[in-house]
Image 1 (cartoon, rainbow, N blue to C red):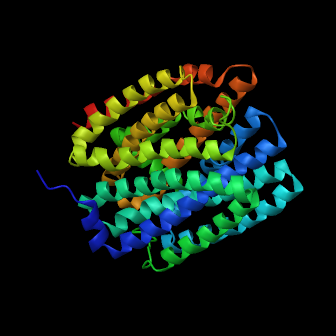
Image 2: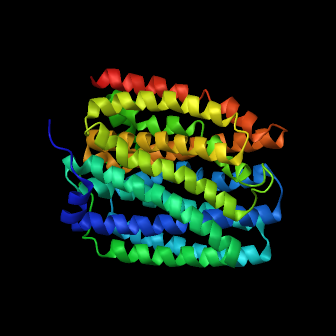
Length: 402
């Protein structure tokens, strides 16, 4: 069996990956400052659980709408330029949030969030398409794990620090910090070499061609649905502002909200880094592990639905993050290894669009259930069987790829 690529070796030997990783890391840090600030701002203006979950909807669902446009763009233009444009655009929008918060204009806050999400809908598939261009095939798994760890680490640190900064310095300070982080991440991406796509003028780079490609490869299409299956119960995570926002006496405000996000991020951080070393980058074991991870999520959500204290909710959210980290890294590694590079932008845009749409719908449903009178725990219990769909899809992919 080939040796597993070590994280420190990838970091030491690959300059472009270091730049890419640092750019992502800083960008993710700012994202969590904005997330905490947005939830806090909306909580100031309304007491509705649905209004809070609409923040997540605005940060996810527009990606699905832009996916048919974003995918072909990523497969046609220099991806480095896309990253620079989207980072600078989102940094500008972070500053606009300050004025909207001062005006107390909730609809405009939602619209500005949507605009930022549309730019993210370009940036995310561009980043996914850049990664296979700057690492070798044997480094896919390690690079994906470190990429997932950067998100999880910033969820852990950024959410905790963002919650503290928002609580001590105010919502507007978090927006300023977010704008600054986008400028720093753009500086890292600027130092990358040009990232032109492998397609040329003779290639069919429209979105329909990517759909035909997946139709010819049903197992690969199933692999592209794995992350979407994980988002079917995404409403469970949309309820974090409620579990950390006063559900239990004494645990209310940005500080506790940030703490709960941080605990979930810590679990995800462990899941992204540890499991791929445990299975030694064996793709067959990765596919089988996805089946087990979805089954485990059913159990963890059931326990979360019976949480009676803030501490127990933290434990169960941490375990759910652990399993989500496994799914994220393994699903991403397998898809990058299996997809023809000429289709990377479109397939990744389709995957991300379907994933975010599903997450948005699940989040809206969770908020509506709570507004209708269900407790957050009862809502989680209703959603706990949904990962069983992921079990079936992952099992199909495993059997088809054997």
